Length: 329
Image 1 (spheres, rainbow, N blue to C red):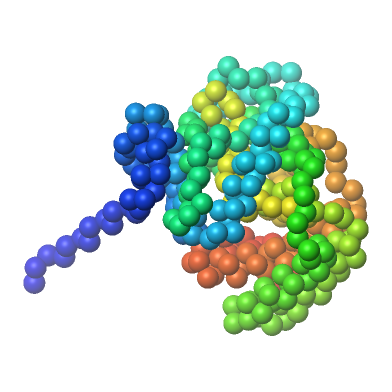
Image 2 (image 1 turned 180 degrees about the vertical axis):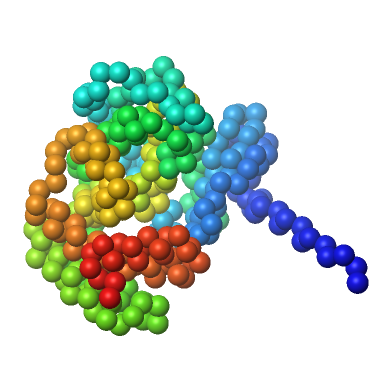
């Protein structure tokens, strides 16, 4: 019997020729340095290099997500950058020192305002794509930072989110927020059948329905809607760069706290305190109760979406959240 042979490693996906031509209009003839896509396949991302410099090319499968990211980058983020203020000063007197293996913080002030990458160009016809200035750095979720440095990052992230939530944006959705939430609840409950036990779906429905009165009292605000350390980049100079606005749209502002509140902050209350110090205020008891109710739907949708996309770690997070909320059966 011949010895077993290993299968060749598949080549990473490359941009379509039309996308390389689009990028070349800004960079000149360019090459793909590496693929940066997440495994879920909802978008494809590459680092490119050409005579005009380095850039990140992001191609969207869904027109809605392309439009959301384009709107955020063209209409929201320039205003946010113009209005950006430094985060409130830290209570610590000494600067943070990165742990071994951490990305070093350079000369940038520890409390400098966070920012987003510059949008260089976009392509609205299929295949849809956006071209961003390349940012050196690493995702905060992948860094080994000291607790003090982590608190600095969270304080700046909180200040950035406060600015985003404070933008005056048009809510063009004709469906009131509470009605839209009920529609989402109905859709995800139906989609969960066969994946989530019926008693759990019923408990989630009951808990999430209790959010409706509170939702009728709040207006939509500009939201990132995936605001976690996996979308925060820390540069070698110590700058915090917020990425991935494909989910951004006017929505319930508490959605931007949900994943932090139900996961990281449960283990690290000091990061919650730092984030809210940057945000400028604590959440009220009414907001915390509303967040708990809406998180029930968030956890259910996480389990279902993750199962559909084969993301076991994300599904486990959804189940942990349901258990923490007392809704896992």
